[in-house]
Length: 234
Image (cartoon, rainbow, N blue to C red; front, side, top):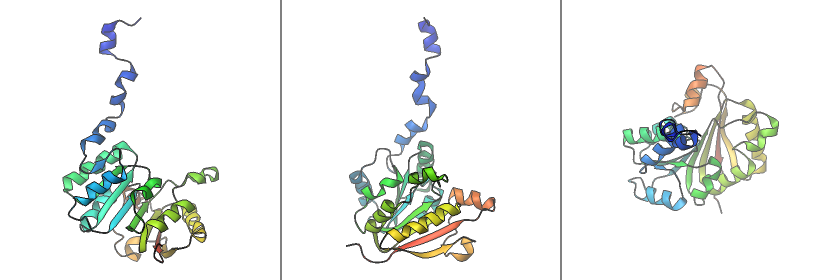
């Protein structure tokens, strides 16, 4: 039997579980900008209290540590931005950046990107950004990819007429996969489709996520797709 004194000095790992990842605790220290256990009413309440309460709504699905989201929210203060992310560390880092910048038009949800439509009324979204989603390159894992036919159908339902979806990926197979799925939806149509220097070709594309910065430094091609919701949601 282990003496009580030794347990006090060296408690079992189970007793120290909260210390393994301190971000699981720190995620609760930023309630003004980070909803650790989000619900649609809670998000709606936060946004209604914002100076940009009536501004266009923009989502960043898989926002990481928030560099892209922070830049966009700073450039467009009259718009409302919501970032979806599951990883504790990335969320805490993003929340700290938002608080430091004193932004009042951006919020973070610890939520899966696939569940975005639960938080959005029909025809309520102006734009959606999907930056470098996990490509799940093996065919047997394709069902795990974020972009699917049901996902695109939810985008059609929640995007305004003329609303845009921005997809960036370094994976050519994922890019072609998304293009093939568009044949199975009614309203989303490609508006921009390219795989070269985005800063030269696409106005306003100088705002980069962490992954885009990394892949650009590695001289990897970046595939960029903009989809437009072509007619009003009924």
